[in-house]
Length: 525
Image 1 (cartoon, rainbow, N blue to C red):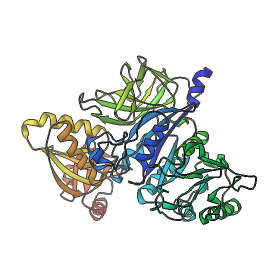
Image 2: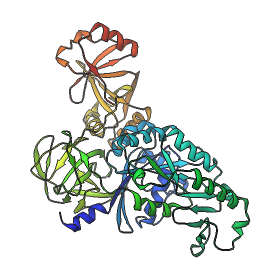
Image 3: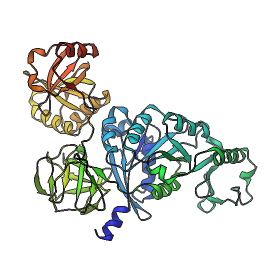
Image 4: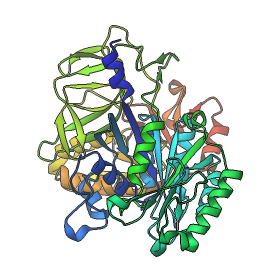
């Protein structure tokens, strides 16, 4: 492999930001983009009246609610690195989208609200990262507001998430009395809300302030110094190896909203975060980004209507190895078909640019006319292989859905087909009447579906809830008889025409299994 290409690949850093809603994830993304020179002014999520929305929240419903329900992909250059950020949905109803996004990154940044500590959604997403063994970097946010004691937060990370923590810096004061952070790693104090020239204060060989400064006289400084001494004597040791294995999380304190501590975080993160990592194929080969010279990648997300004017679809591809060049021939492993890729894009939220070249670690968007499915592998060489399957969740809530206006059935079917292919909702139909049913992990997915059908496809839908069901697929479909279907164990088909039983509850499922022992049921994730 050419050293120039190798250097390019090694300069990539691809990560997802995970957090509970409202911990400041989108604000953090904005500030990182600001440092990358990708945007001139960060739009705050809360400032709805100003008409400034977060750059990474592009969908209409996100602007109305101030939440992220899709995964945005954002890219910028900083200090010789090319950074790809995947901003994941914070809302728990969209955990499946987030789950798949985490399959496309090499590390994760966990944002925690200093006042609330670790919340439910953070735990869920963290577990996915742990399962994949990817390095996790923690940013404890909102230090400019009153929050929990820093030592309590560190203890919470270690006990709730069962991971060792190493504070890279330490707050001096908090809320209205927030004076800055003691930077253990760079051995300096970074002052809060001062001119740039006064931002950093040096430390002496004992780790104390090396200059006379009013901060020295405060109880907050004394408290911070006591805490630092405790961390030095009784805390975890810094280990780059343990960070890479996902066993130790470096912890940074700061305030994304006031842009404090974000640059220090970014620079340190880039130093320790992994470059693009190898990926496993279905037959358990490791495809290495550097030594496997030919292009390979996988589709982890499909998004319709990112540009409402064109009603288009984009397949998001994580490049695993080699180099992508626009106009090159690629083969879709699932179908064996080879075609030329002429339309490819890279993203800054809703603005996109045509991309002519990209390398392992990058995320590109391929214009999709219905060719791709989530989990598809594309390869540039003669050797065809398939990367590991991406997770799909078993839906828990179901609705029957139809078009309010029968005359709009063409738009209705087109809209459903496109939105289902994005993977947020799942499509089912009854056996003979072919009534359409949708399944989802959470209620918000139905609301987003209804909103998008109306605003993007101009179709009003009628949704009739049929409540929560237990969905189970069947290994030996040929042994299933229609007579097994009843009101408590409804037999339907999914969008690939596989048979699926929808059970009313656990009792109904057990009763069915006892009656039909030979039928082998299984669930998705």
